[in-house]
Image 1: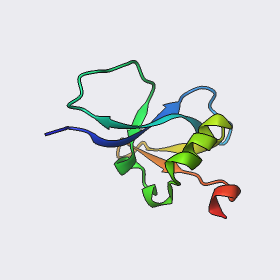
Image 2: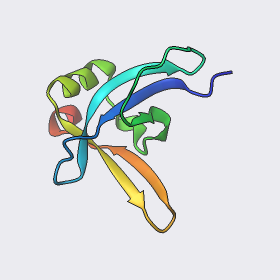
Image 3: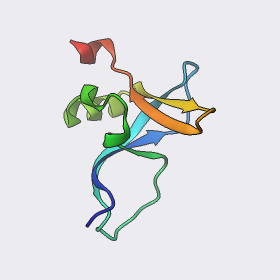
Length: 95
């Protein structure tokens, strides 16, 4: 049984934009039973994105990556010591 068997979003940690958003560096399917592993920046399983139902298709995500659009935001709750990620759709995606 796989520990992770779903799509992952790799976050480009730099630059961090003034409004607290990040760009997506890569979007890929990952099965933890596969023994190949490469260095990655922060990866977020799609199942842990709070508004995952707003994620567009893989083709649209590829366009966001190619256009370097900042569409991910990290929310940190210091009191509960939890971290959450949200997808911030642009106006073009909402259409």
